[in-house]
Image (cartoon, rainbow over all chains, first blue to last red; front, top):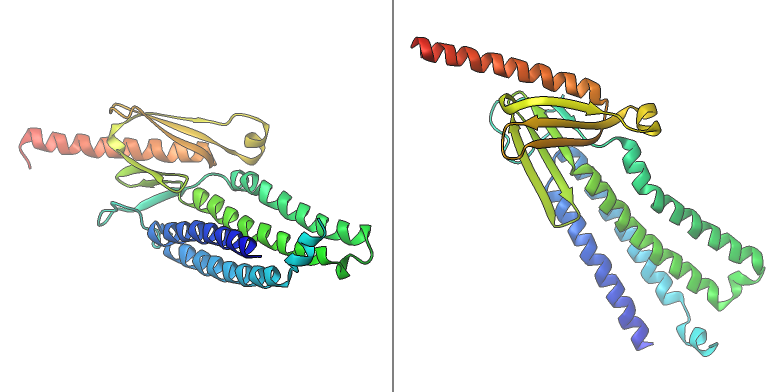
Length: 70
Length: 188
């Protein structure tokens, strides 16, 4: 269980690192401020929804039962 | 038309005449992998449900939903990486110069510029069936400077853009000639 949680945390950290890069590029190199602003809001909203739902799905998986089947 | 456009090194009073990005079809082709992946994820969800009628009650149902959600999380990031790469590759034609802003991945960004008076030759090319149908192609701007060649890749309506650049170059050269003439005559 602990290893799976750690592995999952690592995946989430990778996701957040890539997300930080995307946000940096959206806000730093804005050629059209309105387009960059709209895409920033879309990215942040979508990421939050996907991330929160993914954490809920991760917690709903019965990892002990899955690994005891193998 | 381009009041909201800002680019690094923009000078006061410099008027943006053209803002060019790659054709939308190029972005669509890059996003094709994302679209296919979403279809595969949806198909896998329904396929597992069809194969086993009790699948929704099994332990592996939650695992499948979690796996698909994780894949969607990274596809979301991948979509934005592709969009940023498309959005930040820009060619800008102003009344004074041509600016090429090229984004390669996250950590490589090239910005080069060319004065209109330095342009020697402009060529547009449309190669292939899809570019001909959708009217997109490359424009090569030949210069006398060290950079030598300036290429706009896969831009829409290349022949029109070429004509605009040629007209601007002729105008800039004529103005430069007039200024030079005034200087020679001692009017300045």
